[in-house]
Length: 199
Image (cartoon, rainbow, N blue to C red; front, side):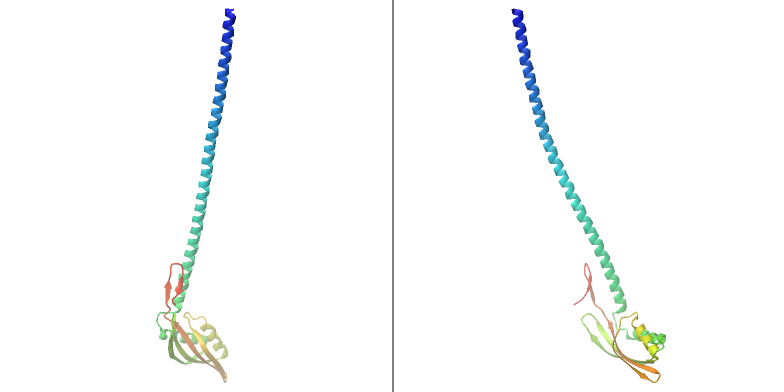
């Protein structure tokens, strides 16, 4: 009996040991699953955090690109404004320079085939942003020559406008009486984004 008792006892021990091992193995698996769940949860949280950081960086890069494009557009517009004002300043000198304008008008009349019979200064007027000097003139020539003179006048390199004119026929010639307003002394102010006239 002893041997059978000993065998029975050994069998019970193996069963208990087998149960303990099985319970330990199950506990270890549960622990492993719980730990991996925690690790996976932490990794998932880190992944969402990285996704949010990448989205924020992309938004900042996109905003920076839009800002750079806006700056380039503003620089282009500023350069266009500078060129435009430079051209205007070329047409509107800082001083009256009436002798220079007289010379331009005489050359224009000669090219057009018109004879200037009178050209006299007739005053000056100050305006808010510039001043104007006025000239009265008289020219004679054929109808085609007078028309050419008026046409070419509109393309002078210097800004000027005809405020009054009258045309009358005298035999085969026509007589043109006119008054010119010639601006000078344009005052401008440079701002950061655009050039504007002083008020």
